[in-house]
Amino acid sequence: MRLTKTSRVAASVLPACGVGLGGVYLAIRVFPSYSWALFVGTPFLVSFVAALLHGWTGPTTWRAAYGIALLSILLLGALIVCFALDGLICVLMALPMAVLVAFPGSAVGYLVGKRLGRGTACAAAVLVMGAVPGLVAFESHRPATPRLHEVTTRVEVRAPIQSVWDEVIAFDKIDEPPKGWFRLGIAYPVEARIEGDGPGALRYCVFSTGAFLERITRWEAPVALEFDVISNPPPLQELSPWGRIEAPHAAGAFSAERGVFRLCEANGETVLEGTTWYRQNMSPGLYWRNISDLVIHAIHRRVLEQIKKRAEEKYGRHEQ
Image 1 (cartoon, rainbow, N blue to C red):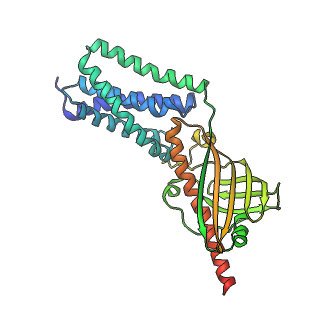
Image 2 (image 1 turned 60 degrees about the vertical axis):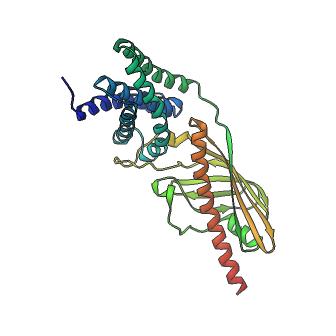
Image 3 (image 1 turned 45 degrees about the vertical axis):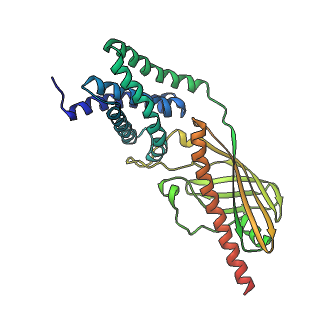
C-alpha cells in the first residue's frame, strides 16, 4: 500500500522521536549525564532513524531526509518539555548543536537505507540505537573533571577610583529590567551586600534565583577586591508548562569558584574590570563553554554598568 505524504512523515518522525525520547530519559533521569551521548549521540540517532525510515517508506532525497530529521529534532525538543524531562531554556540552548548533528545523522541514515539491503540496514539501525544507551552509561561512570575557565569584562567609569570602589563593595538593587538571556530564566544579578570588611568578610551577591555567598580573600582598597565563592544559587529557572521543574543540570552543571574586581585610575577616570573563574560540567565542552562565557559576560556587564551608573551619579552630585 502506498503511503500518503503525511503518513510517510508520521511513519518516519514518530518512531525516531520515540527512540530519542528514550535516550533523553536515560541520560537525564537514569544515568544523569549531560554529555556527548545526550547532546550529540541522541540527535545523531534521531536523525539517522528518521532518514532511514523515510527512505524505506518511499522514494526520497538526502535533502528531504534532512528535512525529516530536523522535524524530528524539533518535535523531540517539544516532547522533552511536555514530559517535563527538561525545560525550554536548556532545549533552546542545545538546539543549534542538534541541528548541526542532524546533518551527518540524516546523511548516514539516507545512505544506509539507499545502499544496503533492508536486513543489513536493520542491523545497522539496531547497532546505532544500542550505542547511545551504552555511551550514556559509560559517561555516567567515567565523568570528566571539569576545567577551570576565566571570563573578564571591563568598563570605563567617569568617576574617581574611590567612588567606584565604594560601589564595588556593595551596590544597591539594580533597577534595570532583565534583558536577553535573563528574560528566558537565566539567573541575573539583583544587588550585593557585605558583612564586615577586609579579608574574611562575607559578601552576598544576590541573583534572581538566590545568592552567591562570597568570602573576601583580598581587600586592597581601592584597587582590588578578590573572593572565593562558598555557595552558588541555581544558574537558571527553567521554563516549563508544568511550572517549576527540577532539572539535574541546574544543580551541578555550572559552578563559580572565585572572582575579582580590579580598578585602575587614569586622568580622573577609572577602568573597572570583573573576572570570574568557573567550571561547567557539560559536554561537548567547547560548545557549552562558549554559551557560559556569553552568559557570564552578560552578568558582568549588568553588575559593572550598575556600579558605573551609581558611581557617576554620586560623583556628579558631589561635583555640583
